[in-house]
Image (cartoon, rainbow, N blue to C red; front, top):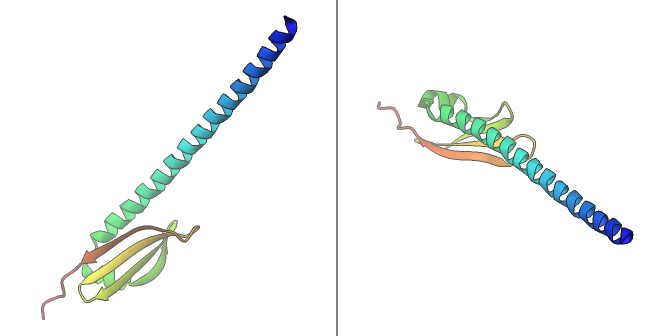
Length: 107
C-alpha cells in the first residue's frame, strides 16, 4: 500500500512538473508575441508619419538611414512613386514596406 502511494505521488509530481513547464513556456511565448506586437506598432507609427511627408521631404530622405531600431530606405523608382521600407537592424528582416504616390509639380 505504501509503495503504491509513493508511485502515485511520483507520477503526480511528474505530470505536475510537465504541466508547470508547459504553462511557463506558454507564458514566455505570449510575452514574446506581445513584444513583437509592440515593435510592429512602433514601426507602423513611423511608417504612417513618413507617409504624410510631402514630396520635398521624401526627396530629401532618399536612400537608407538609421531610424531608431530600424533602417529606413526610401527609393523613387518612378518620378511620382516612392517606395519606403523599414528593416530590422538586428535581423535584417523587412518589417514594413509601402509605396507612396506624389504627383510631379506643375511647371
